[in-house]
Image 1 (cartoon, rainbow, N blue to C red):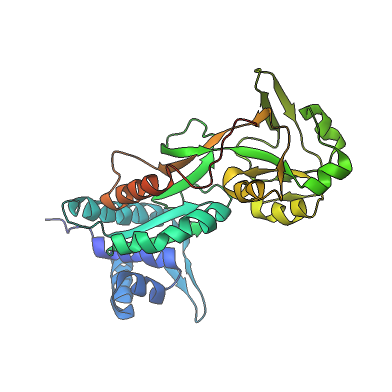
Image 2 (tube, rainbow, N blue to C red):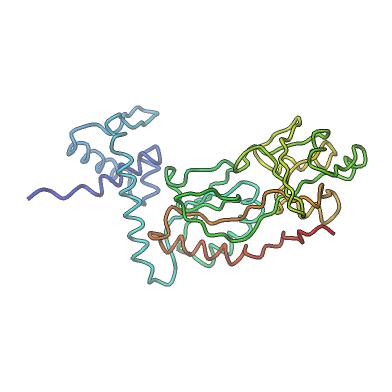
Length: 308
Protein backbone atom coordinates (compact mmCIF):
# COMPACT_ATOMS: atom_id res chain seq x y z
CA UNK A 1 0.00 0.00 0.00
CA UNK A 2 1.28 3.47 -0.88
CA UNK A 3 2.20 5.72 1.98
CA UNK A 4 -0.11 8.53 2.99
CA UNK A 5 1.10 12.00 1.94
CA UNK A 6 3.22 13.72 4.57
CA UNK A 7 0.63 16.37 5.40
CA UNK A 8 2.51 17.52 8.50
CA UNK A 9 5.75 17.95 6.58
CA UNK A 10 4.03 19.84 3.78
CA UNK A 11 2.28 22.12 6.27
CA UNK A 12 5.48 22.89 8.15
CA UNK A 13 7.39 23.46 4.91
CA UNK A 14 4.70 25.95 3.82
CA UNK A 15 4.83 27.75 7.17
CA UNK A 16 8.63 28.02 7.16
CA UNK A 17 8.52 29.44 3.63
CA UNK A 18 5.86 31.95 4.69
CA UNK A 19 7.56 33.03 7.93
CA UNK A 20 11.13 33.00 6.58
CA UNK A 21 12.67 30.97 9.40
CA UNK A 22 12.26 27.76 11.37
CA UNK A 23 11.98 29.66 14.65
CA UNK A 24 9.22 31.98 13.40
CA UNK A 25 7.29 29.05 11.92
CA UNK A 26 7.63 27.11 15.17
CA UNK A 27 6.25 30.07 17.16
CA UNK A 28 3.35 30.51 14.75
CA UNK A 29 2.40 26.83 14.96
CA UNK A 30 3.07 26.42 18.68
CA UNK A 31 5.67 23.67 18.32
CA UNK A 32 9.41 23.40 18.91
CA UNK A 33 12.07 24.30 16.34
CA UNK A 34 13.43 20.70 16.30
CA UNK A 35 9.92 19.46 15.47
CA UNK A 36 9.77 21.76 12.45
CA UNK A 37 13.32 20.92 11.38
CA UNK A 38 12.68 17.16 11.56
CA UNK A 39 9.44 17.48 9.59
CA UNK A 40 11.12 19.45 6.79
CA UNK A 41 14.10 17.07 6.70
CA UNK A 42 11.75 14.08 6.52
CA UNK A 43 9.85 15.71 3.65
CA UNK A 44 13.08 16.48 1.78
CA UNK A 45 14.19 12.86 2.12
CA UNK A 46 10.84 11.62 0.92
CA UNK A 47 10.73 13.98 -2.07
CA UNK A 48 14.39 13.54 -2.93
CA UNK A 49 15.39 17.19 -3.07
CA UNK A 50 16.37 20.15 -0.91
CA UNK A 51 13.58 22.59 -0.11
CA UNK A 52 15.69 25.30 1.52
CA UNK A 53 19.15 26.74 1.17
CA UNK A 54 20.44 27.39 4.68
CA UNK A 55 23.25 29.63 5.87
CA UNK A 56 24.02 30.88 9.37
CA UNK A 57 22.09 34.08 8.65
CA UNK A 58 19.65 33.36 5.89
CA UNK A 59 17.07 30.83 4.75
CA UNK A 60 15.78 30.77 1.18
CA UNK A 61 13.53 28.44 -0.80
CA UNK A 62 15.34 26.41 -3.46
CA UNK A 63 14.19 26.25 -7.06
CA UNK A 64 12.84 22.78 -6.27
CA UNK A 65 11.00 24.18 -3.25
CA UNK A 66 9.49 27.03 -5.27
CA UNK A 67 7.74 24.45 -7.46
CA UNK A 68 5.97 23.07 -4.39
CA UNK A 69 5.45 26.01 -2.06
CA UNK A 70 2.30 27.44 -3.65
CA UNK A 71 0.48 24.08 -3.54
CA UNK A 72 1.74 23.36 -0.03
CA UNK A 73 0.53 26.79 1.15
CA UNK A 74 -2.87 26.21 -0.46
CA UNK A 75 -3.09 22.85 1.29
CA UNK A 76 -2.28 24.53 4.62
CA UNK A 77 -4.97 27.18 4.11
CA UNK A 78 -7.52 24.58 3.04
CA UNK A 79 -6.82 22.58 6.20
CA UNK A 80 -7.25 25.75 8.30
CA UNK A 81 -10.54 26.51 6.54
CA UNK A 82 -11.68 22.93 7.07
CA UNK A 83 -11.02 23.20 10.80
CA UNK A 84 -12.75 26.58 10.97
CA UNK A 85 -15.79 25.19 9.17
CA UNK A 86 -15.90 22.25 11.58
CA UNK A 87 -15.92 24.72 14.49
CA UNK A 88 -18.93 26.65 13.20
CA UNK A 89 -21.17 24.99 15.78
CA UNK A 90 -18.96 26.21 18.61
CA UNK A 91 -20.03 29.26 20.58
CA UNK A 92 -17.14 31.43 19.47
CA UNK A 93 -15.35 31.78 16.11
CA UNK A 94 -11.67 31.02 16.51
CA UNK A 95 -8.46 31.11 14.54
CA UNK A 96 -6.35 33.64 12.63
CA UNK A 97 -7.93 36.10 10.18
CA UNK A 98 -5.66 38.08 7.85
CA UNK A 99 -7.43 41.34 7.04
CA UNK A 100 -6.29 44.11 4.65
CA UNK A 101 -7.57 47.64 5.32
CA UNK A 102 -6.76 51.08 3.84
CA UNK A 103 -4.32 52.96 6.10
CA UNK A 104 -6.25 56.10 7.07
CA UNK A 105 -9.59 54.34 7.35
CA UNK A 106 -8.03 51.55 9.39
CA UNK A 107 -6.39 53.90 11.89
CA UNK A 108 -9.47 56.12 12.26
CA UNK A 109 -12.35 53.65 12.17
CA UNK A 110 -11.13 50.03 12.42
CA UNK A 111 -8.43 50.23 15.10
CA UNK A 112 -10.84 51.80 17.67
CA UNK A 113 -13.17 48.81 17.18
CA UNK A 114 -10.48 46.20 17.87
CA UNK A 115 -10.92 46.11 21.69
CA UNK A 116 -14.61 45.27 21.32
CA UNK A 117 -13.94 42.78 18.51
CA UNK A 118 -11.32 40.86 20.49
CA UNK A 119 -13.40 40.96 23.67
CA UNK A 120 -16.44 39.58 21.82
CA UNK A 121 -14.43 36.82 20.10
CA UNK A 122 -11.61 35.78 22.47
CA UNK A 123 -10.74 32.82 20.23
CA UNK A 124 -10.09 35.11 17.27
CA UNK A 125 -6.68 36.37 16.16
CA UNK A 126 -6.44 39.28 13.71
CA UNK A 127 -3.48 40.02 11.46
CA UNK A 128 -4.34 43.60 10.41
CA UNK A 129 -2.52 44.79 7.27
CA UNK A 130 -2.76 48.59 6.84
CA UNK A 131 -1.91 49.92 3.38
CA UNK A 132 -3.53 52.15 0.78
CA UNK A 133 -2.23 50.01 -2.07
CA UNK A 134 -4.72 47.41 -3.31
CA UNK A 135 -3.54 43.96 -2.28
CA UNK A 136 -4.31 40.79 -4.22
CA UNK A 137 -6.11 39.02 -1.39
CA UNK A 138 -6.01 35.64 -3.16
CA UNK A 139 -2.35 35.69 -4.19
CA UNK A 140 -1.17 37.22 -0.91
CA UNK A 141 -3.17 34.88 1.29
CA UNK A 142 -5.61 37.33 2.91
CA UNK A 143 -8.91 36.06 4.26
CA UNK A 144 -10.71 39.36 3.68
CA UNK A 145 -10.30 43.06 3.00
CA UNK A 146 -12.16 46.28 3.67
CA UNK A 147 -12.11 48.35 0.48
CA UNK A 148 -13.37 51.83 -0.28
CA UNK A 149 -14.15 52.18 -3.97
CA UNK A 150 -16.65 51.92 -6.75
CA UNK A 151 -15.67 48.30 -7.24
CA UNK A 152 -15.13 47.02 -10.79
CA UNK A 153 -16.38 43.61 -11.89
CA UNK A 154 -14.38 40.98 -10.05
CA UNK A 155 -14.33 37.31 -9.12
CA UNK A 156 -14.16 38.44 -5.48
CA UNK A 157 -17.28 38.51 -3.32
CA UNK A 158 -18.09 41.99 -1.97
CA UNK A 159 -20.63 42.95 0.69
CA UNK A 160 -21.32 46.69 0.76
CA UNK A 161 -21.45 48.07 4.28
CA UNK A 162 -22.12 51.76 3.55
CA UNK A 163 -21.64 54.52 1.00
CA UNK A 164 -18.53 56.70 1.13
CA UNK A 165 -18.77 60.13 -0.47
CA UNK A 166 -15.78 62.02 -1.84
CA UNK A 167 -15.61 65.78 -1.24
CA UNK A 168 -13.62 68.43 -3.07
CA UNK A 169 -12.39 70.76 -0.33
CA UNK A 170 -10.20 73.77 0.38
CA UNK A 171 -9.55 76.09 3.30
CA UNK A 172 -11.43 79.39 3.66
CA UNK A 173 -8.03 81.12 3.38
CA UNK A 174 -7.29 79.57 -0.01
CA UNK A 175 -10.75 80.37 -1.36
CA UNK A 176 -10.56 83.96 -0.12
CA UNK A 177 -7.23 84.45 -1.89
CA UNK A 178 -7.91 82.55 -5.12
CA UNK A 179 -11.68 82.55 -5.45
CA UNK A 180 -14.12 79.64 -5.46
CA UNK A 181 -14.64 77.90 -8.83
CA UNK A 182 -18.21 77.65 -10.09
CA UNK A 183 -17.54 74.91 -12.68
CA UNK A 184 -15.08 71.97 -12.75
CA UNK A 185 -13.43 73.48 -15.87
CA UNK A 186 -12.23 76.36 -13.68
CA UNK A 187 -10.09 73.97 -11.63
CA UNK A 188 -7.39 74.31 -14.30
CA UNK A 189 -6.71 77.77 -12.82
CA UNK A 190 -6.26 76.36 -9.31
CA UNK A 191 -3.67 74.34 -7.43
CA UNK A 192 -5.09 70.81 -7.19
CA UNK A 193 -3.44 68.22 -4.96
CA UNK A 194 -4.27 64.57 -5.64
CA UNK A 195 -4.36 61.04 -4.25
CA UNK A 196 -2.28 58.41 -6.05
CA UNK A 197 -4.31 55.27 -5.32
CA UNK A 198 -7.64 56.22 -6.87
CA UNK A 199 -9.57 53.10 -7.82
CA UNK A 200 -9.96 53.75 -11.54
CA UNK A 201 -7.82 56.63 -12.77
CA UNK A 202 -6.36 60.02 -11.90
CA UNK A 203 -9.34 61.77 -13.51
CA UNK A 204 -11.77 63.63 -11.26
CA UNK A 205 -15.28 62.88 -12.51
CA UNK A 206 -18.05 65.33 -11.59
CA UNK A 207 -21.82 65.07 -12.01
CA UNK A 208 -24.02 68.17 -11.60
CA UNK A 209 -27.41 68.02 -9.91
CA UNK A 210 -28.93 68.52 -13.41
CA UNK A 211 -27.10 65.44 -14.73
CA UNK A 212 -24.30 67.27 -16.59
CA UNK A 213 -20.96 65.43 -16.40
CA UNK A 214 -17.44 66.84 -16.51
CA UNK A 215 -14.02 65.19 -16.26
CA UNK A 216 -10.97 67.04 -14.93
CA UNK A 217 -7.33 66.00 -14.65
CA UNK A 218 -6.00 67.62 -11.46
CA UNK A 219 -2.75 69.52 -11.82
CA UNK A 220 -0.61 70.60 -8.89
CA UNK A 221 2.65 70.18 -6.96
CA UNK A 222 1.57 67.39 -4.60
CA UNK A 223 0.44 63.79 -5.13
CA UNK A 224 0.23 61.45 -2.13
CA UNK A 225 -0.36 57.76 -1.42
CA UNK A 226 -2.29 58.49 1.79
CA UNK A 227 -5.14 60.99 1.97
CA UNK A 228 -4.25 62.12 5.50
CA UNK A 229 -1.09 63.65 4.04
CA UNK A 230 -3.31 66.15 2.19
CA UNK A 231 -4.86 67.58 5.37
CA UNK A 232 -1.96 69.78 6.52
CA UNK A 233 -1.39 71.36 3.06
CA UNK A 234 -5.15 71.95 2.76
CA UNK A 235 -5.37 73.62 6.18
CA UNK A 236 -2.34 75.74 5.29
CA UNK A 237 -4.25 77.09 2.29
CA UNK A 238 -1.99 75.58 -0.37
CA UNK A 239 -4.69 74.29 -2.73
CA UNK A 240 -7.77 72.18 -3.42
CA UNK A 241 -7.98 68.41 -2.95
CA UNK A 242 -10.33 65.46 -2.84
CA UNK A 243 -10.88 63.86 0.57
CA UNK A 244 -13.01 60.87 1.54
CA UNK A 245 -15.96 61.68 3.76
CA UNK A 246 -14.55 59.82 6.75
CA UNK A 247 -11.59 62.24 6.84
CA UNK A 248 -13.25 65.44 5.58
CA UNK A 249 -16.32 65.40 7.86
CA UNK A 250 -14.68 66.79 11.01
CA UNK A 251 -12.97 69.64 9.13
CA UNK A 252 -16.15 70.54 7.24
CA UNK A 253 -18.12 70.50 10.48
CA UNK A 254 -15.88 73.00 12.28
CA UNK A 255 -15.27 75.21 9.24
CA UNK A 256 -11.56 74.57 8.82
CA UNK A 257 -12.34 73.29 5.33
CA UNK A 258 -15.16 74.17 2.93
CA UNK A 259 -16.73 72.09 0.20
CA UNK A 260 -15.82 73.25 -3.30
CA UNK A 261 -18.36 72.89 -6.15
CA UNK A 262 -21.16 71.76 -3.79
CA UNK A 263 -23.63 71.32 -6.66
CA UNK A 264 -21.27 68.86 -8.36
CA UNK A 265 -20.82 65.39 -6.89
CA UNK A 266 -17.69 63.29 -7.33
CA UNK A 267 -17.66 59.55 -8.03
CA UNK A 268 -19.38 57.87 -5.10
CA UNK A 269 -18.00 54.59 -3.85
CA UNK A 270 -18.66 52.44 -0.85
CA UNK A 271 -17.09 50.57 2.00
CA UNK A 272 -17.06 46.87 1.08
CA UNK A 273 -16.12 43.71 2.96
CA UNK A 274 -14.38 41.62 0.30
CA UNK A 275 -13.53 37.91 0.38
CA UNK A 276 -12.24 35.41 -2.18
CA UNK A 277 -15.39 33.29 -2.02
CA UNK A 278 -18.69 33.28 -0.14
CA UNK A 279 -19.16 29.54 -0.58
CA UNK A 280 -16.08 28.58 1.47
CA UNK A 281 -16.16 31.54 3.89
CA UNK A 282 -15.28 30.15 7.35
CA UNK A 283 -17.10 31.15 10.50
CA UNK A 284 -14.26 33.40 11.68
CA UNK A 285 -14.48 35.48 8.48
CA UNK A 286 -18.26 35.60 8.59
CA UNK A 287 -18.09 36.86 12.18
CA UNK A 288 -15.80 39.68 11.06
CA UNK A 289 -18.16 40.64 8.22
CA UNK A 290 -21.11 40.79 10.60
CA UNK A 291 -19.15 42.78 13.18
CA UNK A 292 -18.08 45.50 10.73
CA UNK A 293 -21.53 45.65 9.18
CA UNK A 294 -23.00 46.17 12.64
CA UNK A 295 -20.60 48.98 13.56
CA UNK A 296 -20.04 50.76 10.24
CA UNK A 297 -23.32 50.53 8.31
CA UNK A 298 -24.45 53.86 9.83
CA UNK A 299 -21.11 55.56 10.51
CA UNK A 300 -20.69 58.72 12.54
CA UNK A 301 -18.82 60.52 9.79
CA UNK A 302 -21.77 60.72 7.37
CA UNK A 303 -23.31 64.13 6.72
CA UNK A 304 -26.10 65.39 4.41
CA UNK A 305 -24.96 65.22 0.80
CA UNK A 306 -27.39 67.81 -0.55
CA UNK A 307 -25.83 71.28 -0.72
CA UNK A 308 -27.43 73.79 1.61
